[in-house]
Structures are given as C-alpha cells and as structure tokens.
Amino acid sequence: MTRIAIFASGSGSNAERITNYFTDNESVSIELFLTNNPTAGVIERGRRLGIPTVLFDKKTFSKTNKIVDLLQKQQIDLVILAGFLWLIPENLVKAFPNKIINIHPALLPKYGGKGMWGHFVHEAVVEAGEKESGITIHYVNEHYDEGKIIFQAKCEVVPTDTPDDVAKKVQALEHIHFPEVIEKLIE
Image (tube, rainbow, N blue to C red; front, top):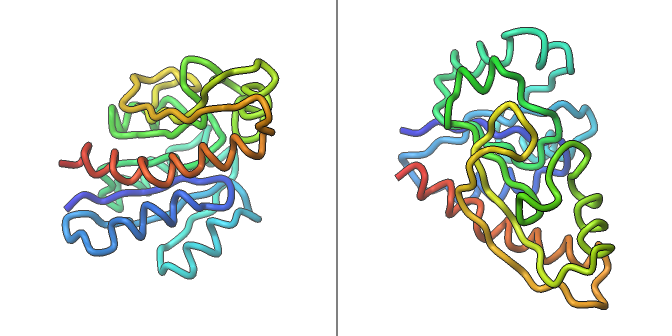
C-alpha cells in the first residue's frame, strides 16, 4: 500500500482529480490533504471527499519538524505538491528523498522559480510570444522548480491566446497526466 499526502494552496482541483483517480485502486491510499491557506478550496474538497485536511502556518512548516513528524506518523510514502506555493524546507526534503513530486504549469526550466506560479506563469508565456507551453512534473529539492524532471507535456499557444486561455489548456494537461504519472512512479 502506497500512502500519499497532497499539499495544495488553492482550489485543490488536482488534489481532487488525483483522489478520484485512485478511488478504486486498493494499493494506493490518499491519507491527507495539507494546506497553508485557511481559505483554500482544497479544505472543502477534503471535507467532501472524506480526506483529513491539515492547516498549518509558515513557522510550523519552515521552522519546526511538526509536518515531517505528522507525515512520518501517518506512514506517508509519497508527498504530492498540487498547486502548493511555498518552498519545501530542507528537513522535509531530507525526510522524503525523491519522494516529493511537484507539478509546474510551464515547460521547465523556462518560467520557473520564486514568484512563478499560476497566472504569473501564463502571463509571462503570453508576453514572451511563446508558441507552446505545458506542464512539468518533477522531483522536489531545496530550490524552486529545480528538481529532476520526470515528465513534460506540451500544448500549443496561439497568438490570440490570453493568459486565461493558456491556463485552461495547461490545467487540462494537469488533470490528464498528473494522476497517470503518479501511478507509473508507484508501480
């Protein structure tokens, strides 16, 4: 049995998609949602899906071992970042080496790093006149968006696309590929 914890800062659409994808898989269990945002949609999704959800603050996350201890107590095997915006602290990276996976809404190494998330990424892609964008699924290290790339998928960006248009295309790729890539990693 692979036990998964999912971190999210926003609506939690990827967390829900991953949870639903593994509903009938007896070898995978989504154990926890964790969020740093008291108004995040992922909290309501967790309630609706019956997934315990843990809310934490910056100090607890970055300056203590409470989150690491919680994950270890829950016997978590794999940590998924699904729209989680904070840098992962060294103690968490060391406790779960090559066991923390992130999804980024661009084709890394382009449009990654601190401050490059969500709409900011899509605005930058459109402003640069890129012909394609996409998703990158990668392992997490102590630096934003610099871990080893596991998978990328591309979508076309046409000159008339707005950042919202790009966001919709990228989110469609996320929902298709993220659960599948997680499943392949577990196998």
